[in-house]
Image 1 (cartoon, each protein chain N blue to C red):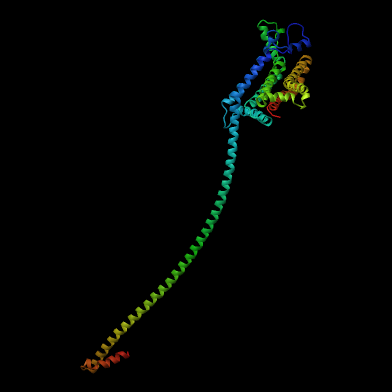
Image 2: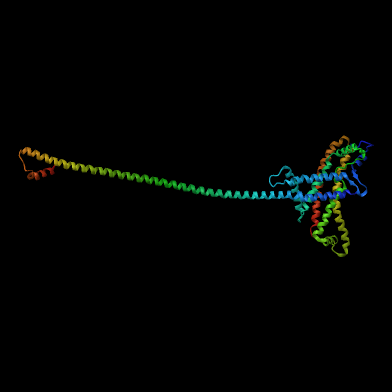
Length: 156
Length: 266
């Protein structure tokens, strides 16, 4: 248990090891640790921020979705209304068209009938005159008797 | 058991185990076993940690890096919790002390006859008398080792005291405390010098005493218990397993405390 020069040797070894540790061992290791801690802290903060952003985006998306749904419902409603009005209008138009066509038909028929009537009247007149000519068996002055014939025709 | 030549008694067995292999005379004696083991273990420490330091990555650490970082962070937290000044030396100093002392203490767990017997065998082959080939494998059971550590700490204590408080401040702390009256300065001085010297001395003796006692009990069990030594060794080793890191931690902790006291102004 005697104190001797071993102590000096150990002191030198101790100083060397501490110096080496201080110079080449401690700084890189603690540097790496601290940098990693910083990185992890940054990462956590970033993830928290991301979560917040996601929440905001989700709320935003919800609002937009609701708006879009309302809009879509609106559009559908409008389209339905529009469709029904178009159908109504078309029906109305169809009706009036039909009426018009029918009326036109009637008037055409009427005109045709009148014309035919006129024609017939004329022919009947001619026929009557011819008949009368034959009956009387003489020449009648057509021009002198025409007023009687006209009267006859008008009575037909 | 050890020894192959001459009579083997318990006391000679113990005596043999407690003798250092030494060269030189008088004060200039070197305990080559203490020196060799401590320096080898010191290199184990700095080289294995240096391997991590060289490849230290901020990304995913390797397993060994994670292990080293665990130790480094533990020491760093301890230093930060105790030493409030700013010094690039304290934390590496604490790390060196903790790991180096721990490694040296761990030598205690190698079966007591293993390395000495091997040394005797080698010595015998080289033509020495095996009875006079000594090998004490736990450097911290050598007072020279622990005193060297505490002396290093003591030098740093004085260095920090003078650096931070100035030579006058340091001296004033020695005589103007605890009784701040001029006619008691001589008394203060005696008290404070004793207190100052007691710090490194107790530091060295605590580590030495614990490990020396532990080692002695291992040797006693090996020397006296016959076959009973197997369970007893196990029990004592299990108990000693607590003492080994605890003593390393206490040495480190007290070093930090002493240095923080030295660098605080009162």
